[in-house]
Image 1: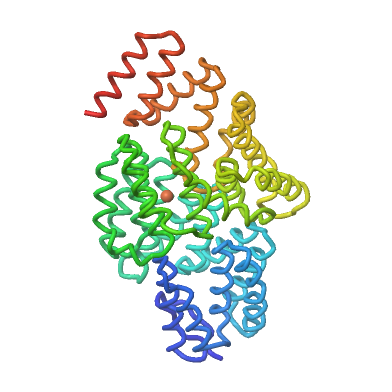
Image 2: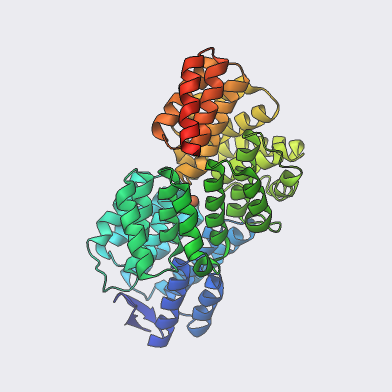
Length: 461
Ligand SMILES: [Fe+2]
């Protein structure tokens, strides 16, 4: 076996240049979240079963999918990659080490190995994209931003895949609060390649965070046909589209989109479940009757009891189960989570213990009407639950729950304080001003309530 350069000039151990070309196509598919990514990876392995990076890529993608079945299959990819990498390059062996750490649940160890690869090989786009994902997975917001900054200095627009790095930088910038730079980078990445759905998603987050829902809807609609073939992630963009409608108080439109775009059929995919549970919870907190929509999401969630690879997912599944007539499954899941938190040695175990378990206890308390208990459980962790991973927009459902729980528990000074904080951070959020007015009325401050209502009316106009 000898090496051939990949699209960015990095040597890859392979049987022929054509196998590396197939590998490049698989990497492109992965970077664009293309629906045929799995098929393209299979094609590489078929073309060159001896290529170490082909097996590594397969292993990474199996763990990424995060399903019980895919996680079970990942160690076989690791073994295949390890055997083939013995005669490979140092970089390929470092990838095998990273995959081994990830298979063992050592996410921090995986990140360290990938970032070490990137110091030496800043154009290793697979190492970069997996590291980016893992920073996102465990809420390493600043690492997400800085990882992109470190490598992009060694790229330029002539290097294939530059736009993907730019798109990742956009998301890191957005999540760390630099909205203008995020918008600039994300839009440039889409100019380079409109199929770069992750970059398009970063811009969608900018519109959400900045309170620009009309622009957000126009943005998603403009690229919807380009993104349609991008599987699950395309539906996440349509979930974002629903958030804009929520901000404009168009609840019927959200229900309609839930049925026709977000949860069109029962799905086992973690992101689909999170999208659905999050949207239903937001609707319910706004007083919208969601009918029996919880049931199907609860059913999928109940099938996952005892499977813990991410407390972020567990929290969303817990939401679905406690609101979707699966209280027994929810109780069992909580027990399993406590057990995992106290026995597992993975990176996720302490996150489960410190944030996942109390948050899921709060979700249960909320559903049982024990709002005071929900507040008591959420207040101590609210500034730390970013370690659950996901985005600010996704975790906002928990922030909304805390406010609603405080209000429902009759803790009006706290509800008032939390809403004062919220409208300061999100001054263009119409429903937030509306809720603030209601709470101010209840707290006996009609003058402040009128002012909040005027602001809401101004935003609605
Ligand atoms: Fe998102």
